Amino acid sequence: MSTLPTSPYAPRPRRPPRRSRIRLALKVVLWLVLVAAVFAVGIALGESLHENPRTGDTKTQTRQLKPVPLPPVTRTVTVRKS
Image 1 (cartoon, rainbow, N blue to C red):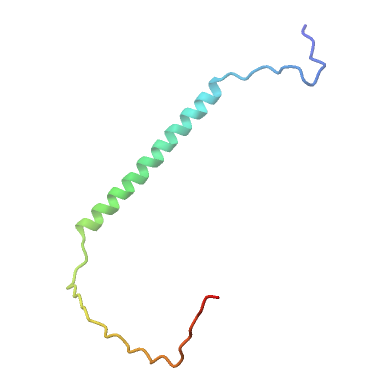
Image 2 (cartoon, rainbow, N blue to C red):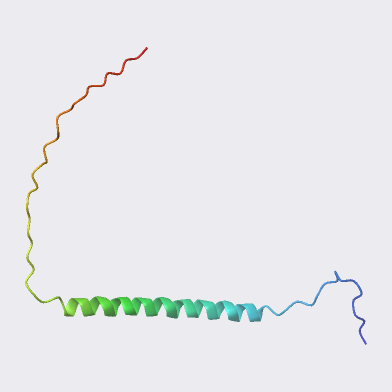
């Protein structure tokens, strides 16, 4: 028969480290699956855009803007250093 520890600061029995290793492995596998899924969606989107380009005639127009004349200066300001 074993006695229970009476101190609240008595060492507790350790958990087996196997549980945390399983969780770590599961997280790594889930991240790899997520990264692979995002990569696959990106490849599929890129291929669909490449295979089905927009149809129609593209027209580019250019024009030059003329500068607007500035109004004449009505007042002169002089700044002097003292």
